[in-house]
Image (cartoon, rainbow, N blue to C red; front, side, top):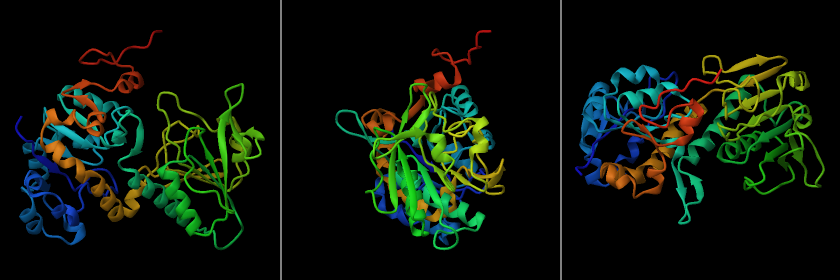
Length: 382
């Protein structure tokens, strides 16, 4: 099969999204044969004080945004939104954070336009037994946790070095939580409690200022906290003691877990700050929903709720650097064409839709679609 061209989008129609997929300072890290198949959107290097002429000398060329979508086989676009639809042409491949499971509009567009969708959120490293090792973009997720904490604390005008000592609760043990923990420790917080799921690795060694607890379920299916002395109590009792709560847990969209019920909202401390980095709508907290950089923090009863849905854009330059480092190793595989994609587990298992045909069963289940093309949305039985 002939090699494929890759169009790299630098601008975003998503509000306050400034990250780019390939950091301009890393373009010359790419081998020349692959680099010449890359075409960058005009103005790509402007935020970095790098001229188009410099980038053009390193790659296949500079194109307008419209031309990138028109002429290139694979479009690298970190955060597509519905406003991008008029640009997208039939038969193309999109490569970015696509969220086809949750987002009906992008799934329907892929079906209608016979698109192939390679989802960054599903790009993982696997061992020879096919077992998960780590997420390719884990550094970006770490920055999301780190930046979200910085931004939320700034908005509330608080810091761990000064003022009243505050109890911090972190739910989750992955990259997001690791970034949040680094930020909180750097800002002087010393009473930090981390709640992890049983099968997950602890994110850092236990220290004098960090206590680990395990999440579990009681006989009624309610979330509980299991402490190091094996005592246990309802998670809502832990939530009720916290001054700052960080949610970094990765939800199973088909079977999400809830930390509390809406009728328990009066158990929250007055003025508690909830930093919901995971921000899965209607999951974890019953009131969870994304917020924006324009309106980042909302009052919920007597609590404050922060859930900016792309917090790593707060540190967009650093995030772009880490995204780029993660993406570069896969560029040669992508340019070699679709036949090579199935030989790479990371790419093959991240293909959610292939030429308009859904190949990720979770999309079918979450959106209640038929398994048969064109994957119509099924009516729920009355």
